[in-house]
Structures are given as structure tokens and as C-alpha cells.
Amino acid sequence: MAKINSNYQKLQAGYLFPEIGKRVRAYVAEHPDKKVIRLGIGDVVLPLPAPILDAMRAAVEEMGKVETFKGYGPEQGYDFLLNPISAHFKSQGAEVAPDEIFVSDGSKCDTANIQEIFDVDNVIAVTDPVYPVYVDTNVMAGRTTEAAGGRYGKLVYMPTTAENGFDPELPKVKTDIIYLCSPNNPTGAVMSRASLEKWVKYAKANEAIILFDAAYEAFITEPGLVRSIYEIPGAREVAIEFRSLSKTAGFTGTRCAYTVVPKDLKARNAAGDFASVHALWNRRQTTKFNGVSYPIQKAAAAIFTPEGAKAVKANVDYYMENARIIREGLKSADYTVYGGVNAPYIWLKTPQGMSSWDFFDNLLSQVQVVGTPGSGFGSCGEGYFRLSAFGIRENVIEAVERIRTRLK
Ligand code: MLT
Image 1 (spheres, rainbow, N blue to C red):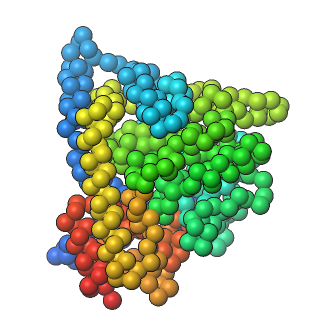
Image 2 (cartoon, rainbow, N blue to C red):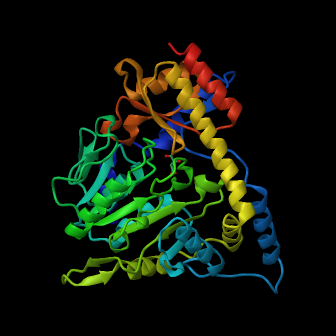
Image 3 (tube, helix red, strand yellow):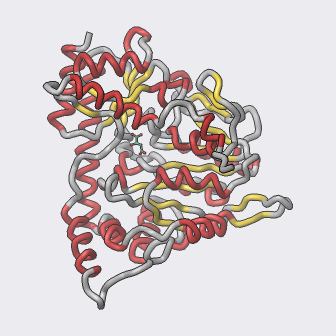
């Protein structure tokens, strides 16, 4: 008899964003006359900039001619994309060789898939609140026991709260794999250089690996903040970095991201000898993935041209102005708000100790604004709420106005 992977039965509720979508659809079905403003899931709204679209169009044309048609490409990505990505890292003060980069169809997929190249007995540390994918995929893989009180057994949770300045403390127990996300989804906080140095030192001392999610690095506006963990000396020996073009360049629907696995990164095999993590990820990708399509990689490469970079920056600036409008607007209505300066997310404290889901329901039913309940990101997110800056400007202004003037 076929049996299921019973680890899936440990998963709590549905995945956060489909659950929100379900509640919003139910509300809209009952109130078709209401204009709902969606600042929940971080999904971009601006179209692809012209230089990127032009590159994609030209590549589509190439696919229509026998002389320029492309079949399977390299699983890791074409050199025309790997080389500019490597140069981009260099411009940010990070050494990453083209053959250490793996182009993929998304950082969600990569941060989800990476765990399978590591032993099931590794001790996993995550922040709380946390991007749910890191947790759920480790539950699916069997690295946890059942959940109790909103937390899975065997996972090490590191609270990142206003009280500790959203800077996770080093775990008291020994951990093997640590997920860090900076700029952070959901809190919008950025880890300082000193904090990252502390983590790299910890990872070295404990032979641990840091999985560094930098999907939002393009949204950093303050100078001097760390964009790549490889800016930190020694990080190449202990860290994998994930980057995404989804939010940076409007690729949520188009799909393109990249992950760096440095050749200096080693982990022990069952015999206790060092093995190359790069070789393992390469093996995984070449077996399970056939690469991102040629037109999409051509479009992605256009992001790294001067015109492409300028156009992408204009979109990022637009979203960060939205973030400012939300942050300032809520502050003026006496909300306690975090984030929104170096990340496209605003993390607010719900008023009068209201639960995150109660605030969600109030916001939806009273002013028809959709956000994301903080508790959906972990128990330390209870009493918090996330608003995304990915919206059309007039809707963002209207949402803030509705919250300020009509929310009881
Ligand atoms: C979010 O809203 O947290 C993101 O859109 C989720 C994702 O990137 O997968």
C-alpha cells in the first residue's frame, strides 16, 4: 500500500498566503461593491521596465529561428547572466565567481530545496518571526516533531523582536544550519555588520552553515549596510546566499533568482570527512532542474546593463516611497511601526494588544485593506501586522487614509 510522507501531517494550517487569499475571496464574494486594497503578499505591481522587456522580446524572436533557437541550456545558467551577476557582487564588495552562482526560478524554491542536501539530523535554527518556507520545508523533511503552541519540536527558534532590536541572539544550544534573512521579511529590519560578523564567527566555531536570504537587498536605502554576507570576511567558508529578481526587478510572475554556493564551503559527510557543498548542490540541480528559460535569462541579464539597472532602481524607489507613505502615515496615527526604510515591508504593532488575525479581520471588514497577520510568521509575530509597500501609489495613499480616518 502506498504511504504518504506523514511529516506533511505535522504542518499547521495552510500556507500563510493562500489562507489570506481564501479569506479575502470570501469577503469579496459577499461584498462585491467594496474596493479592496491588497497590501498582503509582497507581490509587485509595476510592469517590467522597457530595457528588460526589449531583451525578452529579442530573445523570444531568437527562439523562432533555426539559427538562433535554444534547447536545453546549462542547468546553472548562461554565462551571459552569470558574469554580470558576479560583477554585481564585486561592485558590492563581495567575491563571488560566476561558477559559484546557480540561476533558478525563485528564492522560495531555492530556500525550500537547499535543505535536502543536508542530513536530516542537523539542528536547524530559525528566527521568530520567520519566512514560513524555511520552517515548513524542514517539517516536510522530517527534521521536527509535532507542533505545540505554534512551534515545532527540535527546531531552535531565535526571537527577533523590538526588545532585542530585531537582532537574533546566538543560540544557547549548538545548531548546524541557521536561516538568516536581511533585509528581513517580515520585520523589515537589516542585520548590522557587527551582528553578521558575530554570526560568521559562530558558524565557523560550530562548523555550522548560514543560509542567508538576501532577496530584499536591492531595497536598502541607507548607506553602509551589508547587502551580501560575502562582504564579511570568512563568510565564503560558512554561508550560502539567496538573491531574487522577483521584487528587485518585477519578476514575481516571470520567475528568476540566483543562489551562491561558494566553493570554499564544506560540511562533513557521514565518515566525518569534509565534502563540497557546491558539488552537492550542483548534483541536485543537474538532476532535478533544467535551468531557467532562455528568454527569461536574457531579460534578467538586461537588469545588469546601465539602462536596465536605472529602470529597476526607479521601480525600487517607487516602492520605497510607498513604504515611506505607509510608515509616516501610520506613525502620525500613533501606530508603533518598524521597517519600511531598507525593506518594502512595514511591521506594525496592533493597537490595544489586539491579536494579529483580529486586526486582519477588522482591517478587511472596516476599511477593506489586506495585510498579513504577524502571527502567521511565528509566535513572536503575534500582536504584529505586516503591510507590504508593493502597491499602486494611489491605492497605498488611500489605504493609509482609510486606516487613519476610518478604522475603529
Ligand atoms: C511575502 O509576501 O512574504 C512574499 O511575497 C512571499 C514570497 O516571496 O514567497
